[in-house]
Image 1 (cartoon, rainbow, N blue to C red):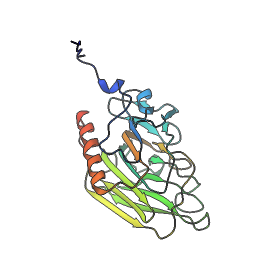
Image 2: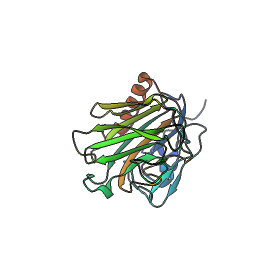
Image 3: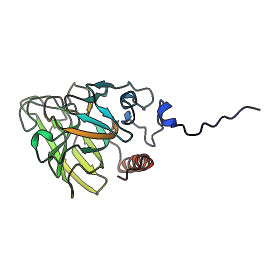
Image 4: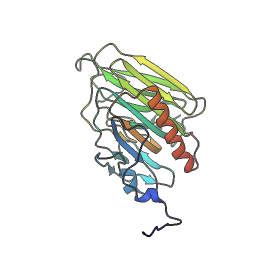
Length: 246
């Protein structure tokens, strides 16, 4: 006979080192950004490198308060040609002031998101009710262009929502799973990836607003619609246990 111990009143999540996601194909990172900075930097994807804290983001029981290029989580996730991301987030302000608009995740390298020889991935707020997610395409700096899929929220972006961004050889799809909006933009030139590792809650060269991020998940493949649905249901169930319906 063995002894079975039951610990009451203990949050087992604080002691876990891995998370059994329902879809693990190409899984590079799962970050539950709450409670402590050590937890926010922990990558719960099996066998994948941990993140690190830059600056002084502020954890709460639900999320991590970040500020782009100042307080954020630096991951060790590299950009590849096909990727799928999930994030639960909101802006700290309503986005009516341009300087308050955040980058929710990115490795975008360059001076200006609106043009020039810049490249990489980005998901950010473009207006109080509009968000854009995109990736770069082109054979070189001269032909590079950021293909952006934009969605409009029926309410301001400082409302919590669950988003996914899918990028691949033929284009980009951004989905707001909380309200059911989506947008796709096609690309006819090759994918162009950046060398910088992906940041959670920050850009590399632009967009300095603040945000709250609760969950971030990244896959180095283009997930199928079925796989995206399974992951969305899993993240929703996790957030519901923390009192947030997305």
